[in-house]
Length: 115
Image 1 (spheres, rainbow, N blue to C red):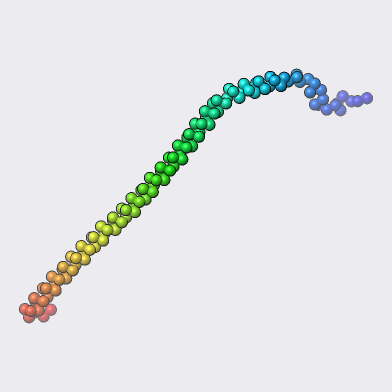
Image 2 (image 1 turned 135 degrees about the vertical axis):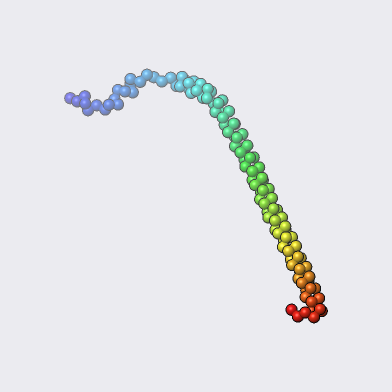
């Protein structure tokens, strides 16, 4: 005879399951989807809007950063010009002092004093 322990553990389980009504499954699925779908669609549109806003924000930031870079380069040029003016005035002062010294030495030589 056949030993009952040889039987597969899955045997007889399928027969024990109640018959599943496919129409009921379809209706439950539709109900579940219709319950969550509007929220999901709202979330999707909100995320899309957020993404678009982020793109606009990033573009604006890029523009602002480039403006700051331009300002920095203008400030650098401005500093360079003011430095150039400063050194120019120093050179003018040195030239004036040299001319004065030249005049003094010339006068002293005329007076007969050897330097």
